[in-house]
Length: 557
Image 1 (cartoon, rainbow, N blue to C red):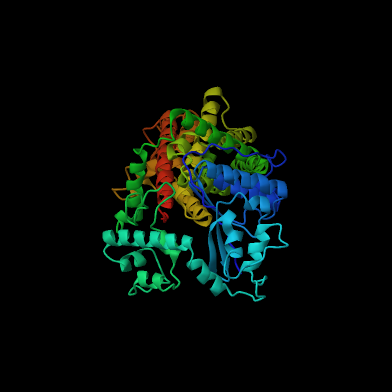
Image 2: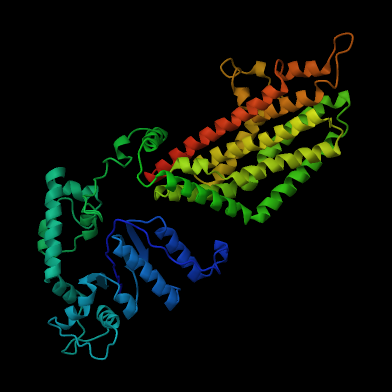
C-alpha cells in the first residue's frame, strides 16, 4: 500500500521568509539531529525560490510545531504562485486542510485524484457507500479505505481495482483524459507520430507499435507521467522538446569541452533580470561572508596548516646548515627547490575543503542563485590570506634558523616572493579542483602537476635539452622555477664576487640552470603573472564545469 498526498500549487514571485532557530545557527551540519538536518535540507531546496518543489516525507522527524511552520511555508510558496508536490503518510487534519489536490494510491492503483476537501465525500457518495461515522479526521477515513482496512455498506472489503474503476468513471478523470488526448494530438502534429513521442520520453509501459489512445479508451495502464512530461510547465508554457534551446542536445557529436566552452560564452552574454546591480553586490557579500565563516569555523584546518609549515621549515632549515659556504651553494639551491615542491604539496591539506566548496557552487549555479562572475569576484579571500601567511611563516622560520642574508632588501624580497608563490600554488589548486570529477582525481592531478613544476624548474631538466617546441615556453610555466631563480639571485648575487681569474660560482650556476639574463624582480613579476593566469583559468574552468553540470554532462580529466 502506498499513499501519496500531492500539493499542486502555482507561482510568479518568491518573497517569503522562514524562521531560523538560533540554537542551530552556528552548529556544524554533522552535529545536527535528524529533525534539524531535515529542516536544513528542505531550507536548502527552498532558499533559491524554485518554481517546482518535489519533496518526500517533509514532516518526518519533525515536532508538531516544526511541522506547522514548514507546511505554512509551503502554503505561502503556493500563494505566491509556486508549485509544491509532497508525499506524506498520515498527515494531521490541520495539515490536510492546506492541500489543494490529493493523489491517493492503493496497492499501486490510483483510486482518487482531485480536490482535497472533496476526497471523503467522493467515497461516501460512491456506490460502495462508505460510512464515515466514528472518524473525526477525514485523513484517517480515506487512509483506511486505501489500505483496505474498512468495509463498505454491505460489510465487504472493496478491492483496489474496483476503486480504481470507479475513479476512472468520474468527471475529474474524464477531464484529465481529454486533456492528455489533446496534448498527445498536439504533440503528434509536430513530431510526426505517437511512437516518436513515446520513444523520446521513455514510456516503457506502452508498446512503440501500439495506439496509446486505444489503450486509454480501454482503461489500460498508461504511463501518465510520461504523457504529462511534455505537457506544460507551471507558468502555462509548453515544455520544449529534448534537443531544443537550453539543452546540450543541439551540440551532440561535439567534444564535451567544446560544448562547455560554447555554452559558457553564451551564458556570459545572457542577460538575467535577477542579476541587477543591488542584487549582484548583495549576493557577492553573502558569498564572501559564507566563505569567511566556512573557513573560520574550521579552526583545526587553520592550526594544522600553520603547524605543517613550521615543521616543514624547521626540517629544511636543519638540512641546509651553513648556507654561506661556497661548497653548500648547490645543496641550498636544491633544498629550496624541494621545499617549493613540498609547499605545493601543502595544497592537499585544503583540497577536501576546496572541493566541497566547489560542489556547493555547482549546485547553486545550476539553481540560478548567482553567476560564475559573482563567485569569481567574491572569492575565498580568507583562504588566500591563510595561504600567504603559510608562506610568510615558512620564510620566517627558515631565515630564523639559518644564516641566510637578513638585510632589509634581501629579507623583504624573500618574504614577498614566498607569499606570492603560495598564492600561485593556491591558484593552481583551484584550477585543478574546478575540473576534477572527484576528489581522488583532484589529489592525483595536484601531485602530478607539482612534480611537473619541479622537473621544469631548471634544476634537473636543463632547458637546452628540451625539444625546440618546448624549450622557449614550458619552463616559464613552472612556478617553482621563478620562485627558486628569484631567491637564488636574491641571496647569492653579491655573496660570491668573481675572482681575479674571472671564476664566479654564482655565474656558473646561473648558466648551468639556464637562469642567466634575469633579475630577481623579473622573476617576482613572473610569479604575479602566473597568479593572474591561474585566476583567469579558474574563471573559465569553473564556468565550463558549471555549465556542463547544468546540462547533465561532466568534465573528464
